[in-house]
Length: 233
Image (cartoon, rainbow, N blue to C red; front, side):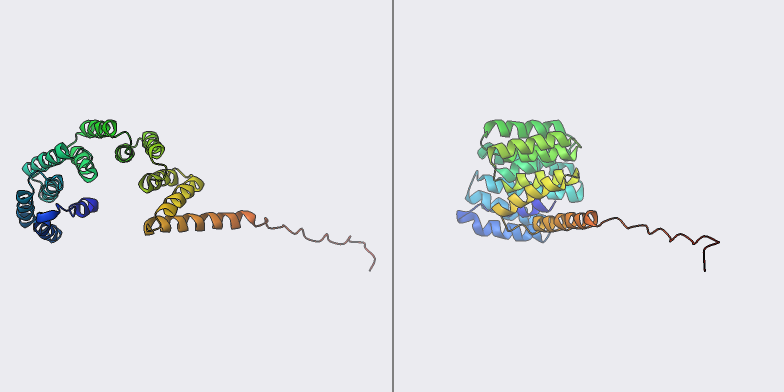
């Protein structure tokens, strides 16, 4: 998952910054053993730093996905828990742990984890966005929509929630509401080229439908009646 690779760039900061930067570079090159060593060195310089625990978890998680090693998955989970024990609101780690649990066929554990996060952070919309993602992946569109509405009740200007809700409504065929959600998201954060492309596509589709609907139907021209056979010549 691309987001997991990007999230591994979260820095340990301070004295560990150089080791962490090297670890990120090695991770991106696919040198996971080297990345682990660099992240361990960063952790040694800042013991208990949650970002460093997260980076180690993300690296072992990626190894587990690529090489099918269950031991790496277990190690990744341990590092994620160490991260969250020190920072329960570490959004990338909460997301990654939920993904790991689903990959391990432990969806109920993932939902319980995210619900616990939501209860502990009632002013944070992100747990609801992640619960919506899980619900959508399992075909529960109504629950996904409810979770996104809950997220927007907390933060009406959250671009992630607006885009996710727009996507749900686009999929359900409600193009007008999808455009409204995407438009609000772009007004808040214009630097979203993928969302801008969705808006342009939906607007073009709607404009085409309007032009087609506005055209009058073709007129059937009846042939002129033939003159009577005995008509005067």
